[in-house]
Amino acid sequence: MASGMDEFLVKLLKDMEETSLEQDAEERAKKENEAFANARKEMGNEAFAEGDYGIAVLRYSEGLDRKKDMQVLYTNRAQAYIKLEKYKEAIIDCQSALRCNETCVKAYVHMGKAYLGLKNYGVARRCYQKILEINPKHLKLVNGYLSQVDVNEQKALWEPKAQEPESWKEVLVKERLQVLSKPDQMPAYYAGVIRLFTQVMKDWTDHTIFRTCNGFNVIGDNKIISRCLEAPGKDPLEDNLCIAVVTLWNEVCKGNEENQQALIAQTSLVRCLFNLLSSRVPAISFHCLSLLVHFWMTAKGRLLLIGHVDLPRLLQCLLGLIALSNDQTAIAAGLLYRLTIVEKFKIHLRANFCKTALPSFLVVLKNIKINLSAVLDVIPVMIKLSLDTSIRRQMANSEECWDVCLATMDECLVPSKEVDCRATLAILLGFMANLGLEPSEAIKKRAVEITSRCLVLQSSKNGKILTTSVGFLCRVLKHYPLAVEEAVKRGAVKKLMLLLKAAGPMTSDYAVAALSACTHSSSQAQKEVVMLDKKFSVMMKLLGSENEIAAGNAALCLGDCAAVPGAASSLLKSDVLKVLLKYARGDAKEVALQENAAIALANLCRAEPRFIGPLRELRGMKFLSPA
Image (cartoon, rainbow, N blue to C red; front, side, top):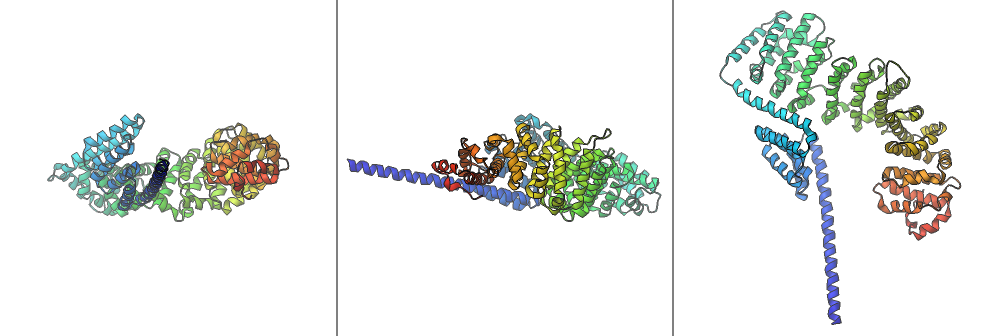
């Protein structure tokens, strides 16, 4: 009986072991599949960003082969299918995404686009309206998509009419184009004919007839018109002709992707766009800017701009308009900001950014007291561009960029009744902090100057300025020892400790990072922290923070300060060993926190041998790391 029971137990244990092994294998396989699917998603996203939509579909499909319930792979692949005009496949993927998550907004967005591609306007509308049932806050987004449906439906209604046997409208257009083809007429003559054209261009049929009758070619081939477009601003009559032409382009290209493509195909006309955009005649530049906005409002128009226009020159022209500080400033800034979101725009700017684009930005910054609104429009664009590693590195290494930024910062620090620069100072600091991510010789030369300015701002009553200046300071102190020396000399430790006691979470996070940079390379900073933070009450509070980056900096700071005679002894009755050991054992997700905790343990034991016994009891000796 006992033998039978033993066999039973052996079999039970064996079965349990096999089950455990199977579960472990399943868990490992699940994690491997998820990691593989995520990797393929990233590869697909990269291919999509480069316009390789077929490759993107392939990568997303490979991910789905291993993880069939990954919603984002379905919506991403649907988006790639739409680019390839495989609308039915896109709809199937959207349906699969909704089976994974019935409230997936992206699935309804892409499904709406797919039905729009199939010219099923009613179903497309229902897809977009479904988004509001999920989240009414998306009203603006949905209205934009519904407007696109209306435009496409109108286009489908009117385009066939333009293909009918010659209508009276087509006859009229052809007659006027023949008049426009007459060579060597006065500019006023051509301007009058073009204005008549614009007056009759009322709907999609008219716009299509203009294109199919080679209207763009007729204008592009007219030598008098081309000459005026190439050099606006010389003669009022010629300027009126330029205004008439660009007004006509606005009318026939508004929402009409085919006409936009026909205009871009006229390379001589595209070259003129820059002359018109930078014209000193406000009406000309305004209508030209409006034309670019019309392009941006359509999917194909955006691709045409990115693919066929000299982007660095376009950037320079838009910055020139922003600098004028008139009605066109906000429009130009809005268009430029949207361009910076497009990856291909940034790719085009990477080559020689400091020569082709940066000088135009700096010209605007230099005129802050003259043109504050332009500076407020430009800096967000620069921040967006600085998110690109290559462009950020070029700006961070530019001596001129730092000189202008520091001079602008000084202008902001000087009180003025006429101009309030506080908002500018906050976003300028954000931009400079972004550049501080890239260590460079240009920053190194100015590290002391930057540090002194940031410390002045530690007393600012403006929350944004205070937080951003501390964030910028911690990045500078981290990389440049001379900056640490200057900061400690100017009383930075005391200021940072005050912030740790009274400031908000984000400012405190930056402050402890700056403080850890000081204590890591300055014995004077270590002594001041010990003097100001009796028994390390502030550091211990930060050490227990849910923010692991803050906790890691606190551990580093505490470990460095242990070198001060008597400092480690003040922690003997605290639970510092348990907290540090918990992190060192792997409870922390941040590797830096694990490493800093191990270093702090080693430093405490070195400074105060009485920690070794309790650490041994806690079985933590193996986690000691050499400092």
